[in-house]
Length: 170
Image 1 (tube, helix red, strand yellow):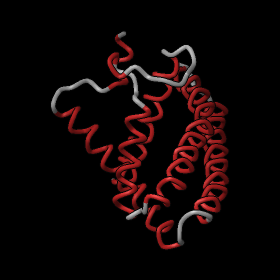
Image 2: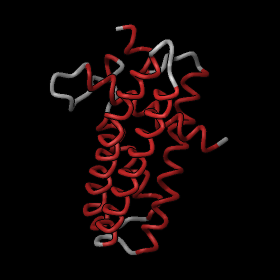
Image 3: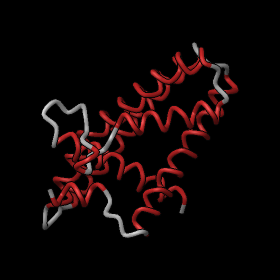
């Protein structure tokens, strides 16, 4: 069940990125006042979280966090094209076996690219953090996603529309 919730969170974050990016001429800065995803606020929150969870020194945080944010953005970019292509297929009324195969192939290819990125960035992380903190990062990253999912669910339970629905109305 937790894995499903994490996937939902990742999907929601990606949708928020995508919807917000479509509303921005340069695709970089969101407008939180209009319900857009505030990437800078999320980066700050994640940065603060990782500093605490990993017990990063100032020097480690200064070297590690830019790499983490770069890694996060590249993972998003890898999946952007896949999300758009699979959404197009999902919108079709009469999907064929070939459509489902295409969605599977697109997602598997994105997973492969993301795994390659993970290998690349964990090597970069090893240049600025000890192995113990890198391993701790893996669980801290998951914990952060779970907390974001919990916050999202709490907003939903309190009747606050999520940003995805809010953006669709505008």
